[in-house]
Image 1 (tube, rainbow, N blue to C red):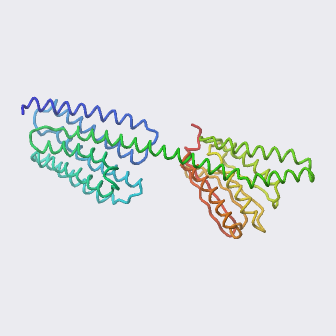
Image 2 (cartoon, rainbow, N blue to C red):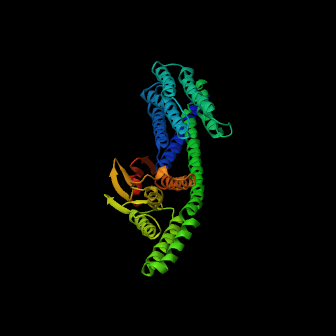
Image 3 (cartoon, rainbow, N blue to C red):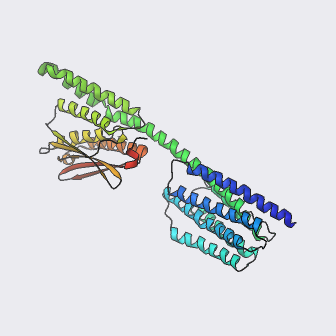
Length: 406
């Protein structure tokens, strides 16, 4: 094939590939979600852009076939394989797979070393490109090992075939170097698959939120509680008429706040959540139950949390902590910042776990699962519950940056 034609193909493919990679990198950097997987992807794209830049510079400014531009270009191309392997491993780890990253990285890197040695010591095209082929064959093997079905992995398989084909063309010795184009197509397809996974995850979360709303509604406004509240208010009409108005206001406020929270998919100020919690506490003191005290220690109040997270924990402490204990009569609510996280703890000094019935355990489990789901979806928060002889302690842990107003 004519040398001019080969050079035109190489430089055109490199320019087009560089533009594709730059566009992908710009779009990827604007994503809100930057996890470890996306971090490896961005590094891989940057290295590929560097390799393409050296290839273009070598074809424009260098007169010999083997020069410093060529060495750097092939070296960076050989590094894309190990970096993409790390992206693949991170993807599988996020999906629950277990991988020995060191083994596969060393395997990929050994192929990269062979490429560099072949370039430095003026090896043949076959010696330069076949280790590149091996790198992506290794990725293909990794894909086969981890894949649950060929259909689910079809996108990855098609993407990996691009650099393999490009490297085989280079190994043929005709002088065409379109490895950059093969890698650009792989990265473009992988980014598309990443976006599809993100959208699928978002839809799954929306479904989970919808299901959680129904469960939350049944948990927070269950008929038994409403019946008890109304019955006690009716008794107050005879026993303490002056307390009826306050009880009705507390009850209506409790219902209103719950219904508003169920339609709220955003974070709310902690003070607003505490207003709702205080309303429930006032209502709980009206209903027949043992006397109790609530102590508060807020080192931080100006932050945001999901609605209906603190109140259910206080409710559990009142009903199933001190409510089922002969000795306990105090509930402690605290907030503090530690290690880049905001903590909200609800602690009681009761021993309710010793007397809770199986049906009540199910009720508590539904409530705490609802809280965990809302924390996870809305702010990547966690809920931990510890039970001891001294009582029960529920602790909410949220990354501090997630609690700030957007």
